[in-house]
Image 1 (cartoon, rainbow, N blue to C red):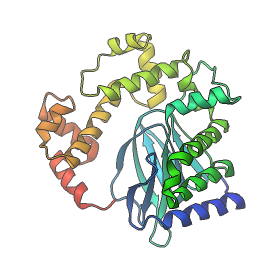
Image 2 (image 1 turned 90 degrees about the vertical axis):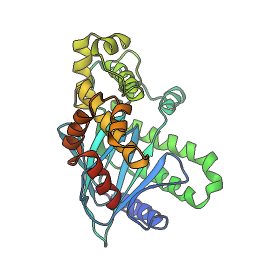
Image 3 (image 1 turned 60 degrees about the vertical axis):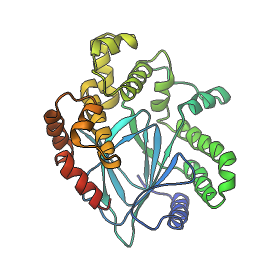
Length: 303
């Protein structure tokens, strides 16, 4: 994907604005609750594990690799990434330097805004019966970068954020939905689609991830057969329901270990494991180190 001069100017302006707010590496919250800014002066030393909510990720400098299941997605200033449902993503920055740091913004959306946009505009929900992956990459356009610049500028005038930010976020979402892959989002908001049912299952798993997952019961709740549920869930997430739940459990466990004064056994039970030894094995398999060593390494590292 090539970058046109107008887009390049907009990305330079966004980089300039961000560099005025962020001076250190890491993920930074902002005065706009749904907006985070990421910066790194070097490629990732470790894989980054996180749950991406319904959000837009735009890279302004550098390159990032996102992995969902066994599939990889590389994106840079020429493209943006969207996750339409909650997905456990493994990622790493693969291009960054002190002279040209990796810079990106992640903007989370409220699902209710889609229904508002559909109601107030001429956009139509996707009526296709096929179910697609809940993540996609598309070409960055001036129509998306322009309202993003105006949103970032609000950080200079925090009193304007409560009134203006929601309108700009809706404008950005409207532009994403207008793009040629916008139907990959709308499929999750069409009540008669399989994707809509899988989105509901994903919400239930994330809400009750510590509980035992019974495929037959969850399939019944969303009105699918167990085989159809497994088939469409894998299409959306690139993993089985049980594997998805395990990844969500382990990612939540890691957050608890880092943020709370709890030992590994306590956390194991909190996220649904009956066996601390099984928890430790699966944790090490996913993160490369057993819980205590991983947390010490994480706290001492600079992402």
